[in-house]
Image (cartoon, rainbow, N blue to C red; front, side, top):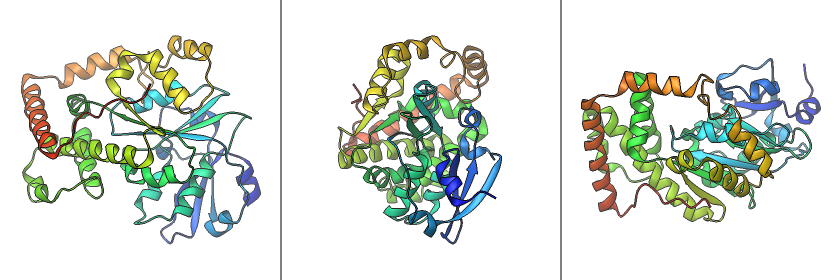
Length: 329
C-alpha cells in the first residue's frame, strides 16, 4: 500500500473520486501511456488504487505547477485540441479526469476542495512540463469556481455552430441523442432560465432538447467570460480551428502559456494527430465517410434546419447573439 508521501510526490497518482461522505479521495495510478491514450481518464481503471483522507490532503504540502483548461460545449473538437497541444516533455494533456465528474456531483463543493483538486492535478511531471486539463462538458457549472482558484490561470472555451453540434449528435446514433438530452438536463440546473420550457420538454424531439442545451451553454459561456474576464477566458469556434489549424494551435499555446515553439507547431501539424480520429485513433477520413453514409438524410437535414431556425429565434428574442464571437487571437 502506498503512503501519503509516495502518492503526493508521484504525479502519476491522479485524484479520481470523492466518496459519498466527502471525507476520502480515491487516487489511481496511471502510466504515461494511459494518460496519453485515446480513452478518457474517467473510463480507465489504472493499475493501483488508494483511498486517502481529504483532511490529511488539506494539511499536506503540494508542489503544484502551472495549469490551463479547455472547457467546451461538447462534440466540438475539444479532444482534438487537447491532443494537438500535448507535446511529450513540454505539455501533458489530462483528458476528462474522473475527479472533476466527482466534484460536479457534489451539491456545493467548497472553494478549498476545488483548489485542492486543481493542485493535485497540476503536480508537474518532467521539470517545466505544463498541464492542460479538458473536463467533460457536464462540469461547466464549475468554470467560475475553478477559475477563481488561481488568478493567473487561463482557459479556452471551445464551442461550435448549432448545426455542427446537432450533426455530431446524429452521427453518434442513440447514444448521441441520449447525450444531447442529458446536456440540456444538466445545463438547465444552472446555465439559464428554463421555466418556460420545462413542461414542454417531454414532447420535444431529441434534437430540439439538445439544441436548447446548446443554447444554454452559449449563454453560460458568455456569462463565464464576462465574470472571469475576457483576458483570461478566450472563446474559440470549432470551425475556425478546423480551417486554421496552425494559427489555432499557436494562439492556444500562447494563451495557455505552454511555451511551444514554431518547430513544435510544425511537428504537431505534420504528425498523426490530425490524420486520426481523436477519440478512437482510427483513420479520420475513413471514419468521417462512414459516419456521413450512416447518418445523412434529407429528413434529418430538414429537422436540423428547422430546429436551428427555432433556436435562432429564441436567441434573438433573448438578446443573445449566437454562436458566440471568437476572441482567441
